[in-house]
Each structure stands twice: as structure tokens, then as C-alpha cells.
Length: 246
Ligand SMILES: Nc1ncnc2c1ncn2[C@@H]1O[C@H](COP(=O)(O)OP(=O)(O)OP(=O)(O)O)[C@@H](O)[C@H]1O
Image 1: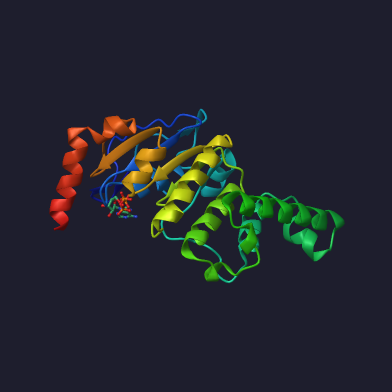
Image 2: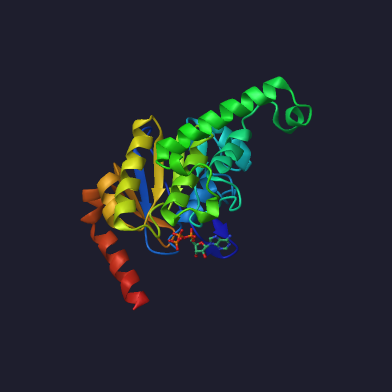
């Protein structure tokens, strides 16, 4: 993936297996978010392919990618700040509803039935992520950790086979990180695959089945957490980044 002269990802070849928790790590600017954007249809890769469950998805429009079974959260939380937690999840579900706005305008009975079902499903999802007690609170008033959970609930609303989480632990305290870790495991145990960008190495090394390391747009290592931690190229990339920052 190139942006003018900047090659953000260069010959990155990754395979995420069904049912695993796979982490993408690397110093700032390594190409992690770009990878998410290429997978989810925000960018069309300059060259190369993206396949999901055997199907080519590179260059597909974002809503089509969603329909194939991929959902994501963002590094900077993107919620409807003035809506309640419940409404935020329901909006995500609406994309999959049959009747939509027309049914609402004409007061169709099936619309109300679907709305009731949507409400129930949204509550289930809030319960799953552990914030059902805050369903009616306005999103912007939720504590930061709960806003991140709400984003995950909303992403799960499309019933994805693959969930991409962009720095889910950012800004969380240790207790919140611990329960996030459990939540990510439950998402996987629910039959979904998780692809994760995360800077918190403790969390990454605890929950990931495999880890890929990007540096300057190149894939420099891939393997189990232990393999990656002991890889000299990885150690160098991180130490180099620290030296640059100091
Ligand atoms: N739309 C864009 N236009 C131009 N350059 C871009 C664009 N998106 C990303 N880049 C460049 O691609 C490179 C990789 O950026 P990316 O955001 O993917 O890194 P990252 O690994 O996610 O970093 P961070 O951990 O800081 O979020 C950077 O040099 C960035 O400036």
C-alpha cells in the first residue's frame, strides 16, 4: 500500500487462521492501522490481494466488506456521543434490518416487531461486554473503558466472523485491561476470530495465539508470543524506536 512516495506496507504477507487471536504489533508508523484499512475496504491496496474465507475482498466497498463478516473498532473511539449506549448498538444493528426508515414512517407492525427484537439483541450485546447496567446512559457520559466496550458491542452487532480491534486497551487502567482481556477471550470462544492492534505488550503476550510484527511497513516477524519476544529483529526494532524517541 503506497501513498504517493510513502510505502506504508511493503509485501506484507499475513494469514490469520479461523478462531485465533492474532495480534499486529510494531512501533508507531509501522503500518498497523493501514493494514486494518486495507482489510476493511477503507483503502484499495496499490498491489496485492486480501482474501477472506476464500473470497477476494480487496477494493470492495466498506459496507460489502462488513457483509462478508468483518467488523472493526477504531483507535479513536467513534460513537454517537449524544445517543444512549443502547441506541449506539441499535444503530449498528439497523443496517441489517429489513424495514428500516420506511417501515417506521408508515408504522408497519413488522417494523415494531423488528425494533423490539433489535432492542433485545442490543441489550444482549451490552450484557456480553459487561455494561448492560448503563444501557440508557448517554455515550459521552460513560467512563472511557466503558466507551471502548460499547464500541466493541456495536461492532459485534453485525455478527462478524472476524473482529478487528484497533488499540482496544489504549487509555485503560490495569483493572480495565484485565477485564478487556477476558472479554476478548470470550469473543473468540464465541466462535469469532480476533485481529488486534495493541501497544500493551503484557496484554498481547497473554492472549494472542500468534503475533505479527511490522516495522517500517515490512513484516519482520510472525509466530507465537514467545517466538516473537525472543526474535532479535523485533528487539532491535523496539529498541531502535526507543532510541529515536529519546
Ligand atoms: N492516508 C494516508 N496518506 C499518506 N500516508 C499515510 C496514510 N495513511 C498512513 N500513512 C503513512 O503510512 C505509514 C504507516 O502508518 P500507520 O498509521 O499504518 O502506522 P501504525 O503502525 O498504525 O502507527 P501507530 O501505532 O502510530 O498508529 C506512516 O508513515 C503514515 O504516515
